[in-house]
Length: 489
Ligand code: 4AD
Ligand code: MG
Image 1 (cartoon, protein in one colour):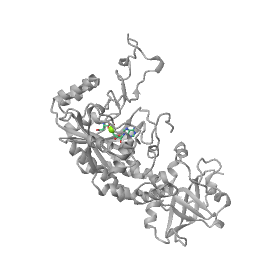
Image 2 (spheres, protein in one colour; image 1 turned 120 degrees about the vertical axis):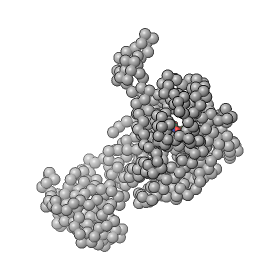
Image 3 (spheres, rainbow, N blue to C red; image 1 turned 90 degrees about the vertical axis):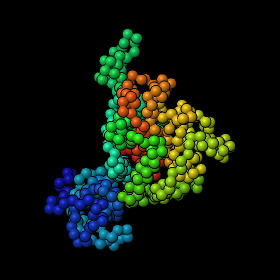
């Protein structure tokens, strides 16, 4: 049956109200038009309707005697409907008012026998496979509203502080991190690429006349911006072909990279701390209802867990704590000493060795943040051999002016550094580390002409959203995750 025949009477004289704002300001006795997706239809009488504008549903009351059976049968889970009705005081608990339906139109039916989602708790894994419908659930709608809020707050923070948004390229010829985790960009056919005399692919004949890849970081280009505009930031997609199948890694993620002329590593840490605090505070202030929902969700999930598996604090309390307290600041060397004196180290509980010179593993970072300091920690001055070529060499000749911001439950959210502005030192590092110098001619020239000390960092956007929403897996805070073996939707 087509939808027109189901319309009881069509009216266009009133404008649609969005449910979120309506819940704030509805006047008893007024007539309203609302549209949205059915979250529940109880007792053939109460529809919980949601249009995405708020975590809260509006209650629509259906006097079933006034509506055709055919129409009522189509008010199914996640069907899309339009309702015209009167705002009346609610007798039930849970809402001050409700909408007494006068006209209902089915905009998009949803056969409950065929619709992939059921009105019950579904696992995150299952919902990931239904990414085209998962945003209709309370959890995911809250997550994606908050993701938006964090993105908006990023731009607001930088704009209010005099930074310029620089769009750095997605296709590049360089490997900014020197880690070789790049996706090639090519128009050559895999089995049929032209070869040089030596039998290797002749990239000169490719689209750009050279080998190119998707960017792993906009930093190197952001440095160009900083050495002209003073304070810039990037906010764009970033791609890493690292085969890390963890709850913290994506092959396509978004990164925010401020870069500032005349900043040293200490200015950089101050900026990082005030920036992430601003983001958390923005969401606390502007999205309290979504946070409250996510907080309750975690409390429900943890009900049957052992104490040591539960979070030490609820979500909102954790966020407030981060905003209200100074981050701990230690050097890598101090971190190693603390770790070597820790209980888990002495009891042989760490899987990876703790030795000066090797990178801190997630288990070490978590001990520092969650056990030792119980707050975010900034670790700085890492051994040069485990960090990127562009980081500024310290006077000890062994460490670089690098810093990582570590968060509870997440680990590294920010990686940054003061950049090596001294041409000769940078050249030595590039040679030492076998970095292909031809691709970096312009980066080197920045040190030759009008160079300056400068610093910056990269914030992993999804890791930040993961922290703020309290979700457990990074795949659940990006709409369409790309991970090893998975690029659906
Ligand atoms: O520490 P990283 O590799 O630093 C850089 O790329 C620098 N160029 C940043 C700079 O100084 N401008 O990455 C920065 C952040 C990490 O701290 C982490 O939060 C996030 O990016 N990140 C990832 N997030 C999700 N999935 C991945 N595979 C990620 N790799 C890094
Ligand atoms: Mg890093």
